[in-house]
Length: 477
Image (cartoon, rainbow, N blue to C red; front, top):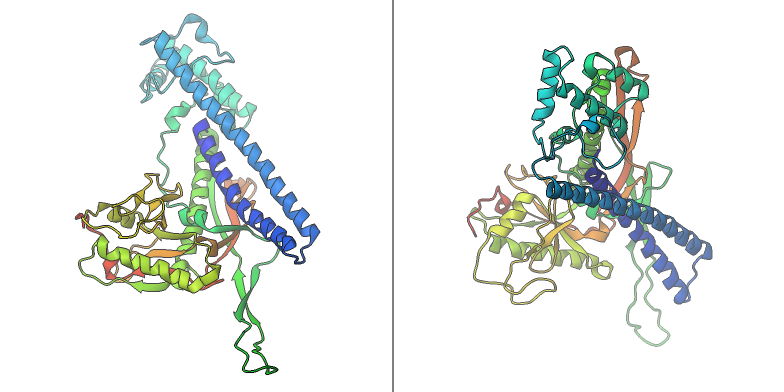
């Protein structure tokens, strides 16, 4: 696995940790506010919350150091490549006699993407070795050098030193060859929708025990009224709550690989495991949006947009209507952190519109006379832009496109802090089991994790839907 891939994974971990840290900080602030306001707050709760945040900060510090080290490594390798090109242009692929042995240091690899991007030299050397029975002069030397480099730099793709030695044994080192890493890095993984909406939710740590989360909701509040006269009875209504039960669910997948694929392939296990992780994240996110009864599409209140010839100018007021309904539902519990979640086709359709009118009221962060702002970030990198009223947009292709009449999508609007998602901090858990399929030389990989979610602590979310959201035509209106 290259340093760029490792850095991306570390940055994803940092993002997840930051999402976990926010509710802890909010809890600590609430506890301290209670003390400042003369209310009772357990000193033990405050100490425990501080300790929890400190532990998370320590993990964040370690991840930041790791990210900085990987960035430095990437920059250093880029600088070395530039230096090589500057001091010896056109000769980067030439090998000197003393390069027939592997060295520890910063010497260039035998086969490199800048000098042989398609791997033609590697394949040519491989063919010559095969044609000449393992003896092919310079080709044999280059392949032997490459095998030595693999033993040093890519041991993680092997099943131990004995396996490497076994694979390296044979006529002219032919049996021990592995494909250069930069060629295997070009493999095309299955494209996944991943978890843009899940990453935008209000994240919580899933409790260690139990398969149900119970949340108390006040459904009957107290009352006040004007006193009819002196000494007359004042208003009295008993407060009451209703229990909201949130089920803990299990997201899991498995794959069995042959030992031949693992031991004689290059990066096969790593590619498979990465795809399992991507499938896990996609399933989780799609569940939040589309699950029967509890998914966002099934709990959101509809704001209908019915139109046989839809335009962006007509759709936008419906989105504002949805934002208005969110605030009307939450009142003083509204955090103001509203988000709009939509399919990428709808996001780009919003960008295709041209017009001569604009909102009469300016909004923070939105340039005058513009229909919102596109941040030009790539898919899955958080907020893609903002609408004219300042509402951030999350683009998520787990949003359905076959709804309603069969070709419609939906735009979801809600308060981010009321989209609650609990995840096990260790999830997903990865299991590599060799015994179950040992008789058939198979290795079983299992990935699983527990999660729970609710969008109905306060019934507030809205969805813009209807025939006005059929598959879009990019006509500039």
